[in-house]
Length: 195
Image 1: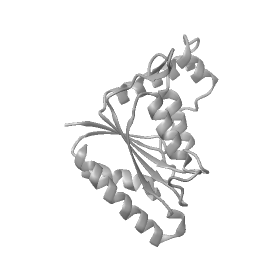
Image 2: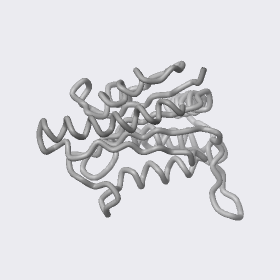
Image 3: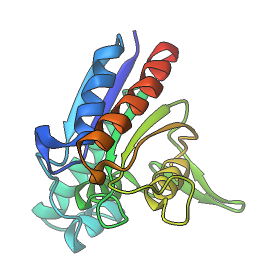
Image 4: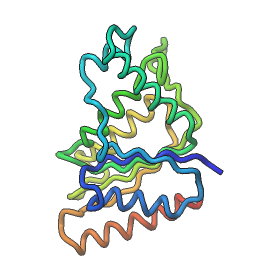
């Protein structure tokens, strides 16, 4: 049985379209599931102490705590076969809570390294499923920035097997939400069969 790590990032709790789709996907897979909801339980802001603690030798207790948290998050990713991200678009970007999670996850010499041929990801053999929810319609357009960011940052640490599932136009009312959810669920059911 596979181990699956679910990362929710919406600040809208049960009202979140991405959270609802993540929960639907969880109900369709047979796996050992670990969930981290950084929207409901945000990580400490990635600040100077966090950067100093995770990039060098921690000099104080706050920096030591930041390093310990980063190590914990990286170990959790390494312990799972599949990563599932629920990612709503906020103001054309990812939620700040998810950005903070990624800041703790990306560490030179640990999750990636620089080589003569450029950066090399060190987290390999993983699959990612990224559920994107948008108020408007952005797929494959110049404002499809959340997909570009998630693809780039996951590739950077070595995760290249990525499935993107969209639920778009949810800002257009209940009918649009129902249509977007239904289309996304078809894709999620397909992916659930191959995990």
